[in-house]
Length: 172
Ligand SMILES: CC(C)(COP(=O)(O)OP(=O)(O)OC[C@H]1O[C@@H](n2cnc3c(N)ncnc32)[C@H](O)[C@@H]1OP(=O)(O)O)[C@@H](O)C(=O)NCCC(=O)NCCS
Image (cartoon, rainbow, N blue to C red; front, side, top):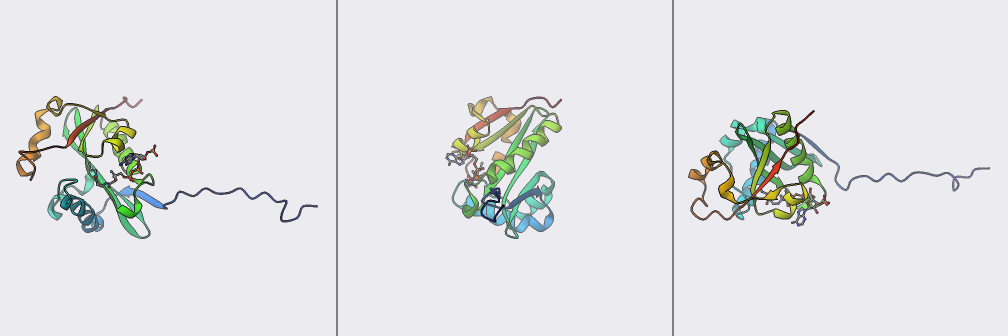
């Protein structure tokens, strides 16, 4: 006879964060600005104005958990052969649980769909991007088109971010 003790109940291994990664909407923009500009104040990334985020909201994905936006990232098309991961941010309490990866992967997929062969990032987060298959390259190997934003960047004359590139497989 089977007692309740004999019944095998498989353990469900839920991810630590129940988060949904989805396309951004205009309703997310203020929270995105809060995340991005919080890290920008610490010099970790470039600040973004609300206008820049509204203008480019279609470039972004967000991670939503516990009813709030806890992460964001964008894919900016630079040129025919190049696109950039921009404004990648995960709220401190939600870091280290795979959300950064879950934000970047759909953007890489999108670059593939757009038939853009290379994605780059300018970053201090070398271990993170290495885990996602990016390699460090000399900055001067990136096209001049990359540097169009530098005019407005507070670090323009002393840029110490590291250039990392991932070359994509062609989609079948
Ligand atoms: C960079 C950032 C987005 C990473 O987000 P995250 O959710 O913590 O990253 P994940 O948990 O998805 O990490 C993915 C992998 O990278 C590794 N990783 C992430 N940060 C790491 C670090 N600082 N050192 C070593 N490995 C790291 C993780 O261990 C994980 O490895 P695994 O897949 O083998 O388990 C987050 O730390 C952040 O928002 N930082 C502040 C803002 C910033 O610097 N943004 C980047 C601008 S370019």
